[in-house]
Image (cartoon, rainbow over all chains, first blue to last red; front, side, top):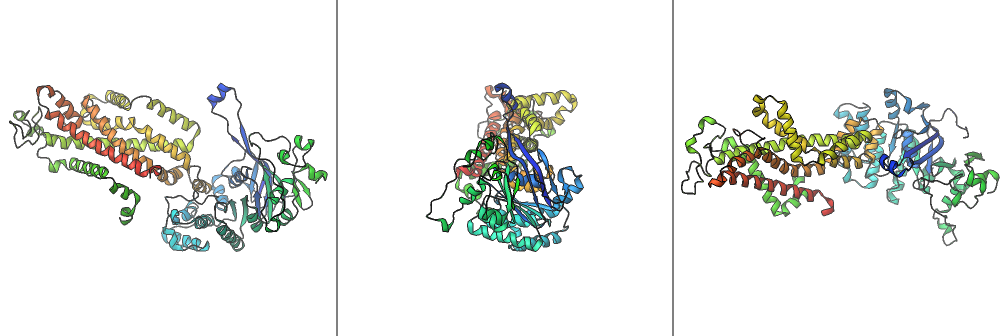
Length: 335
Length: 300
């Protein structure tokens, strides 16, 4: 792993891995003599986010990007490696300090229909973090804070009396953002915040997030499979494939000169007016079964540049110009 | 109130005439039972007012009937109408209390089982499986027998009702637990629960404030249908002679008393409580069935 990180990194993941036990029940295993099976959802991922920056993680479904989001905020414990938030490892802290760190990080979820409790009024949903962290006391103060938060995300204070089902997907996502902002966090993890929304609404939500970032100096970890959204909002981009980061670079560098063949394929797949009518290289193959990933470089079965080394040896992230990529072909200058 | 009148539930209720009728009948019976001291012509529990000379009087429309006793008297000279009203009060009261006990027990265990998972879940669910492999009435008999064995004999009549509630309550929690566990498994992985965990809300609070309200729909259906079952179970235990004492008869006790005189031609002592029980259970069951269909989105 390269150590280009400085101690000023606000949020850092250090070789974080998370394996899920997906074995059959004990009895079935004993009878069939089958071994335990682990799904390596995240397999040694390292990255750092500087204060005020937006790092995006992109990849196909099932590549582990949502698991990374949950590891970073502490919803999952890493199987190995560690996550540092402002220099502190959340898992090792005493309860009181953990609560203090928790207040400073929040999460916006993917599905606005599942992320708000359908039985709660919006004002109670938005006020929950305020109550939990004791940031506001008394009905009047809570009502005032909730009203201000709703206005901040483009809703009206009167909306607090309603239930989530009375809102559209985009409005629900605004409520979700208001809840996330209520504890005045510095770091927001956004797990595909726009993927469940209509295209016209996606832009509104992304612009709202960018405005809030400027206004409040927020740091974002932005998880997405939507490259257009990522280009719109992020400073740096990490590309994930089957639980590993294969390339990480400045947004501009990555989109203008992708190094890893997987990144190149992803970018080739973006529909684009200038390219219409032209012959297009379709991405070959399927994502392999994550329970039994290919040896060596996980991408080798789909990679046009793969050779014997790629099939045997796992590439590490290495600096190539302004970008970091994990690819033998790039390292050897074959691409 | 307006919102309630506009709701889907109310519409589906008024559309079904059988349901409206069942609700009306069950409502009237429950109301009459609980107002028994006010509307009953006699107090069958007041032993001093009973006269053995009044025993075995047939209903008023038969030859030897008396207007004092509209549907006749039993072997103790108790007015049967009053005894049924008071008896229904005990039956319904025991039924409701046992349903509440089952519900609290089952919902609590189901929530913990689903949310905690792992060994705790496995333990609670295996206990549930074992209990489910016996008929509920057998469990109630077992609990009843054990409790009666523990209690001193002079207190048994006093505490009979509590023993009944406990034994019927314990025999019925499994269904609630399984249902709530299933809903909990679904709800706990939803993102609103993760959002609550993220800010450090305690598991107990997440279970009660977040998951429970979203898991209560099917529980209400089970509770309604279970009420009918609990009333039947109480009647069965009382019929078998291990329910409430004969001095304070429930519907089941009345049926048992009447059963002894069935062959001597005194049909009214057992038929009237029996019909009352059947109509009550049927209307509660119909209400439960309607509620199940109305709350099931797949049948809409």
